[in-house]
Image 1 (cartoon, rainbow, N blue to C red):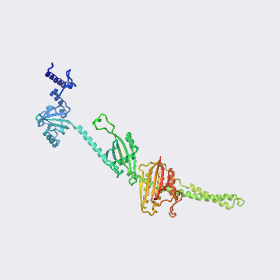
Image 2 (tube, one colour):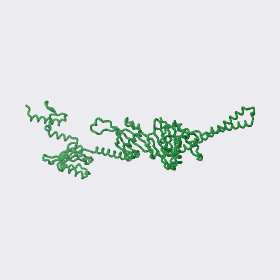
Image 3 (cartoon, rainbow, N blue to C red):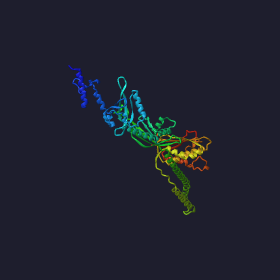
Image 4 (cartoon, rainbow, N blue to C red):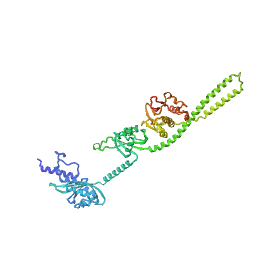
Length: 536
């Protein structure tokens, strides 16, 4: 028969053995396992050893903060042995730099029998400083009166240094991003903006001043096109993607965009061991409008010289061709007359002065024709390159601005936002479209309308870029809508000195680009020139 008191003593001895030998299991009797123990089975020595070996510095003081007990971790953190601090006040650890307000808060909480937690600057035995993360709690007796204070603290210096370093780095990064002239934004998988700097907000306002942030964001994604789609789907970065934003106003914008994927980890505790894919997208956008405008001004000046040279060369060629055509007729008549007279030998001797004169005239005419043909200026040979018709028309509007202003013409410019490029010669296209615009301006200047409007629009349809140039001038009669493209034909009065070569040159240029130019017969409010150019 088991004695209950003896059984209790055996259990106590088993606990003491564990504390002494440091074994991982409590010795138990054969008919009782470890899960049958209760809190009442643990001796005070177990609690003492648990506190003594705790990894946090623990001290117990009286109500005046005189140390009554300090564990091993306390000695390790402070450098003082338990014998050195016994009976000493906790103030021996103070560096006397902690604000008085912190101590007032500490004692205020303890006087209310409540715990206090905070940070204090402490001094070790070797005079080195450390930041202590301290928690102090009152120890109450059965009458709810404070009899001791229990203090627990740890060296928080390294963690504080790391936190401050992270905070400082975050502050520096935030300052750099917010003050950067480049627009920066981070999007999640649903394209929600997670972060954006002031430059990005300004860019969005410039892109769509009358639209919402969501609409402006979609415009940006549309401009980036396939690059942005691949970045989101496959994390393939893109660099130096240049886009143009042109909705027809005077504020055309140019941007250089870069995109990269950012892999972030989930913050929730449930995903600590199994991190889900959390990809974000970083987009940076640099506004290069001012640089492009300076380049465009230089290109326009060069373009003016090129167009003037092209026009002069074309006019010279047409004049020479006209002269050749006019001279070829008389020369041919002289040759025919000479042949006829030579066959009538019964009336004209071979050395007859009339025949000799005709031979001299024929020879002189042929020599003149040959000289004219050899003197024809060569057409400049420009390379076929990808050309954006929106850029061509904007250059034309810039070149024609003085005329537009002097004639009081209001321009409505409606380009398609993403217009495909065509293969062509930019200089020739600019020259051709400028002729059409100048013709429209001159037509409106000769009308009695006080409100003069020029509408220019572009759009793509069925592998064709379609351009419409509409004016509210007097228009063109139906019987002349094909004749106006003939060389040397002009509807302008002779005294204005017009050669009638403008529309002929326009048609030649458009045909060289495998396109068509025509007058819209359905347009009744003036004249509408329709140009269609194929793209691949």
